[in-house]
Length: 466
Image: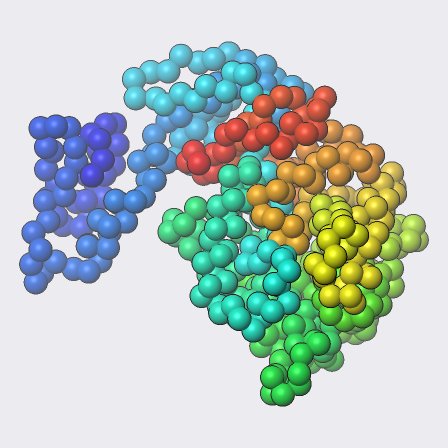
């Protein structure tokens, strides 16, 4: 039941569509008068159950956000004393001054805050979080438990101010998590997901590496992303698209946290990468490439991937190839510093083969981002959350500043730039009429203190306040 208000007409029309009468109680509540009979359809019952938990009435109403400082990210202007008008989950207009509300309009007082578009993290893993037990969980954690854990991590991410993310690989529950959030079953950011990572046998995405061979008989194949040779690579892409992936992620080199002994060596040959990108392009989706070593990054960029993730050991020559190809760079500094610290200061946290690879990754990625920034690469914000605790994604801002990026450019990487990489630049990433009402507010001024981005005090996604 909902308080009777300006939404009565909308709700009444919806109820009429179910062919059930609606009565108004004297205490001002809408109550569907639906006798339970053999003619009552399951669809009708499920609909009323949905209304009991749905934020629909919030989406329908008009909300004024009174913003002390507003960074629309359309330009590099700081606007003061502004009102953002939200209706139906969209931004409908922006007005100067604090607009006086009419009856029934909800007002959110952010007069002492800085308001920005909802943040975008282009590299997360919502099903998983690194711990001392991570290497045993492949044997002890079932898919249902993984999915439930993902619900917890998704809400943490949203409450940190990230209203949209790219999930770049998990055991498979990330697709269901995306769908559940879209249906309104659980709170979380808008998700674009890669499903499972594509990897060579024994590569960064092959979780059977380091295990007894008889535990994986037959060995993993293209259905779970393990693909060798162009034909298997094409089949793996098509299978992930069939499952519902929004993009493809390929492990073009080794990685830090996998049990393979070298994180820098190239894994896929040129013809395999070309097959992956060509197949994905034919199916209308982009490819993101996990890559640490220079040769694997060069091959992936020349094959036409949309983004390089991590890019730790890139040479200046490869940076220029990326710039020429228009390849985005997603540096994931927080993850680099997290694994470096764990390897150095937490004995036994990683297996020895991983510890040796993890040492020094944070400083090296930071140095690489500094060179990429100076050379004018397109940079999109991404953290690799899951390698460190979800909900701490905001730490990336200070690490990007440490690499030498200016505050405006850091903020653009997490809004306008990230929205372009995700193919959603007309929907998210800026405070402008017609886009989704994804907005956050922080204490302080991030243009003078970038760590203000760690003090998120207000989050709205699709017009709903979380």
